[in-house]
Length: 173
Length: 90
Image 1 (spheres, rainbow over the protein chains, first blue to last red):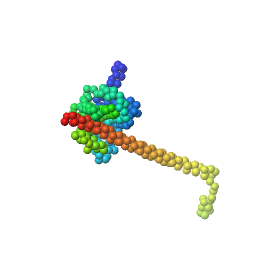
Image 2 (image 1 turned 60 degrees about the vertical axis):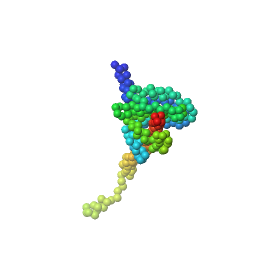
Image 3 (image 1 turned 135 degrees about the vertical axis):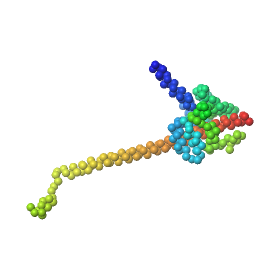
Image 4 (image 1 turned 30 degrees about the horizontal axis):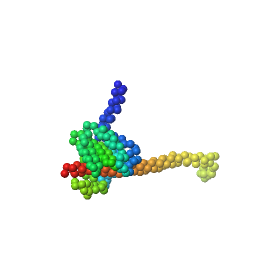
C-alpha cells in the first residue's frame, strides 16, 4: 500500500508537468561553456507576472498582452564558433518528452538556414504549450512557452525589438 | 509661630541626601535608553527595507530584460519557420 502511495506521489506531478505544456530541458553545463554566445532564460509564472509589470514602454504593449496569460517562458540559445560543438541527441531527448498531446505543426528544413521544428500542445481550442527547436551546425535554440500563446501575435512581435521583420518575400524591412 | 518665621523654615536651604544626584542621572539614562534602542531598530528596519526594495527592483528589471530577450528569440524562430514554409509553398 505504501509503495502504491509513493508511486502515485511520483506519477501525478510528472503527469501534471506533462499536461502543463512544460518540458524538461536538461542541458549539460559544458554547452554554455563551449558556446561563443549563450542565452539561458527561465521565467516561471510568478516571475513573468512580476517582470511584465515593468513592461511599461509603448513598444512592450504587445509583449505584455501575450505574457499576461502565460505560465512560463524557457529559452536556451547557443551560438558556437565551430560546427559540431553540440550533441544532437539533446534534441532527441526533448522530442522524446513530447507525448501524444503534442503535435508537430511545422518542420522547416533548409540547407542555407537552420532547421526549425514547432510543436504545440493544445487543449480544445487553445494552445497550452509551445516548443520550438531550431538547429544548425553552429547554433542551437530550444524554446518552451507554457500557457495559451497566440502564434500570430508572437510572430507579430518580430521587428519590435530592433530586429528587422522578415517579409513574405524573405526580405528584411 | 508667625507666618514669616514659618516661610523661612520652609525655604531653608538643605542638602540633598547622599547619592541623590547619581540616582537622578541613572534614572534619566534608564528612561532614554529604550527610546534610543527603538530609533536604532527603526533605522535598521528602514535600511533593510530600502536594500530589499532595491534588490527587488534589480531582480525584476533583470527578469524584464530576460523576458524581452526570450520573446525576441521565440518570435524570431517562429517567424523564420513561417517564412521558410511560405517560401516552399510558393
